[in-house]
Image (cartoon, rainbow, N blue to C red; front, side, top):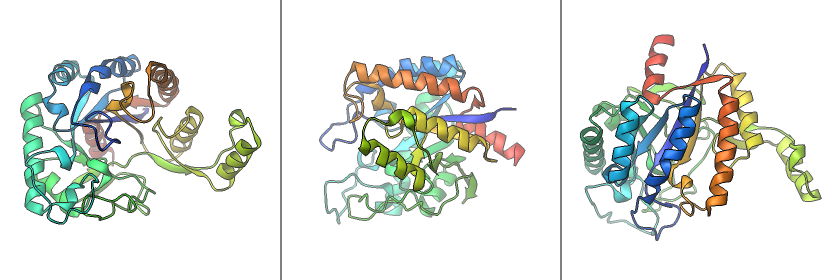
Length: 310
């Protein structure tokens, strides 16, 4: 039996790296191309969906069609700064986007409750998977997810410390430096960490100057924190990561991307159609490689698989 390949998409508003961007969701119109690529390899993306995306008519129609065909899963992705009800933080110190964990517990719960109901009513299905906004999570947050029937979360980025990424009140993000890379239960929720490893390598094909030699020598001696995420990692690095994890006892690998990365100008990484075409060329080759070792799985399907096999 092949191991499981989980594709997670933070399905959210356009270009959330730009604090001046409004809550537009034009990027929903660019998801079909990625879904076709997933269908090609029988992979099933998990669209972790924010409040504004769950109100977008194009996304609703698209997602319902894919759900009916059994090609995807809808999960929750809660952006506290644009998910109702509105609540003004009295100790707001900057223009940074707020973590949900900065709000009083009763406000946290109400935001979860509202988005959960919207997703369930819109897509006519119980929502069981979740990823937090800006990767911030704590025990109170997890307990609230369990209260509303969630089964799994994928907010943990093992080995990554987000404490220098400040929220609206100036608190740091979650520190996952010492968190496990394999799934584990916490407060009744199965935590399925994002696939991240510190890998050592020397990529000869990336050598064009002496500076490149020094960089690759550093990667060989110290290593590089590598995600299955194309915006921050090359195809070479991602394939290397797949090989390393495939040789571990870990029974899954998790890919992540933001929905707006499929839209030209929707992120800092892909500014035009040529950039998007190059991205899809990389993804096609990566998915072809992964299909040799892994089969597609949603988070909900992985949860059921984990219960039986662990």
